Length: 384
Image (tube, rainbow, N blue to C red; front, side):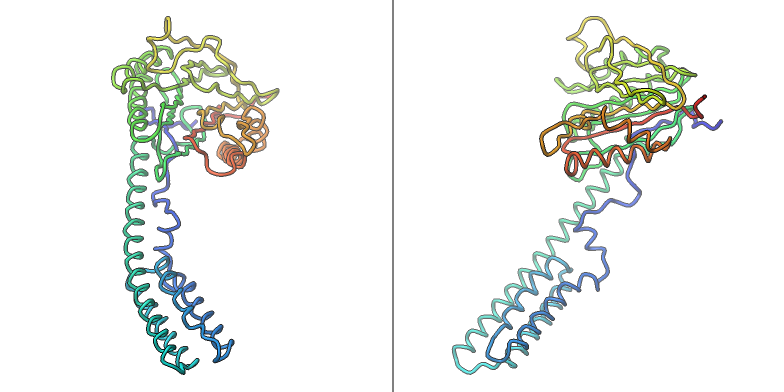
């Protein structure tokens, strides 16, 4: 049996090594001929329209669409070159149409001045567009590097547990946010954590890193899963900003067929059994989120549930169950997830991809909140 090294853990899925570019950045990397096609097509259309309309119709001034279009597609020097070609074509079309009086000559001179002004504005727009796009690419690259450091890409197996994960940040340009998860192989068995920091942005990322760091220490030191939760509580209370809290759910896999759970104000997990109905594992004695222990009596308590080979355990954050459809309804995770996950026939990545695709269809596009999904199963064939 192959297992990952105990010293390694699994966090949220990371982006690929290459930065995920937006449309503007992708356009900058496109070949020159692709970027020239729209501008060249505009020139051809104006020329054909002017020639086909006859000498009595003056359409050469429509060539003024070239500089603005070039500003959206090309680099500044390329804007100058293409706009110059457009001006030359406009002059040739004007000669073709003929200018019979002084008023027409003045109109043409005014058109040339306006065209030159448009060209200058287009060069400036192109320059600032490229500067902004490069800045956004740099920001996104830094965010991806931060995710690789904070939440390493998941391995398909940790000990005897198989897993698949998906994470989406709602923050603009960010690849990370306040949701977190990790899976560790410890001396006490495989342990998993999923959490959701209150808030978004850099503050949420800081708290998420605090919780993950504390978990990666406590999971190896504490024999009891409740002890891990207590260590996390102390860390959040000691270091997090006043008023901040983190919902969390901890899971320990006990071979051969049991899981132990500790609930700290988080979304209950969904157990999709190989045989029978799926069930939401609501805690018999829920505890408060991490950082709010002063509001509760006693400490966190654990409970157990059966978990056999072939069963699937789905952990998620509230960004999943609170995703609203066009009619305002929340995503019905317990109703939709079992069939989608079972249809994947044991392929955890495919099952999670199908579930996430269904979630975004329900939401009608990208999610408005951070969302994390973690799917776990025993590594082994189900017994008859």
